[in-house]
Length: 210
Image (cartoon, rainbow, N blue to C red; front, side, top):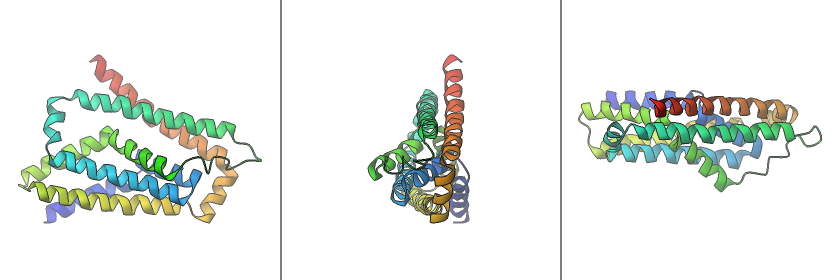
């Protein structure tokens, strides 16, 4: 029981730490409001549960047999993050002092949910984390149902963590700061998304050449 608690706590710490999931939720909340931020968080939480189900059903063995899958995820996920980065940079350049939050209504809840889901499902670090978790749980002799229960716990944790981030980044004070410095903030998001995406993509290219 302590082992399961330790696994869930480790997953929680990974969720709290900065990364593509946090950036996706915070940028959506700042740029399009609380509902869109919550929708992005819901997409992330769904992705977390899907990964848990896949590993409970044995996809970990598939990834070990076909490591090229991780390489493909680096290319796909990296390319998608670069795309998000370019969109943020475009928003920063296109914004003017007369229209500081012109992009707030552009994203809809459904699109935000899909973005959150896609960011998680194409993140190779998420897959590698679940590889480590599944190996640990297998050594502990846990059943498939117990593994799925951990997946439910991880998904609930993701909902709470990223839902909290969505709430924080959509508060009046934060949105007023965003309205004033939207070009700088969008530019920072663009550089961050682009930098992470470019690294993933380059790592994938290196693995492809190896």
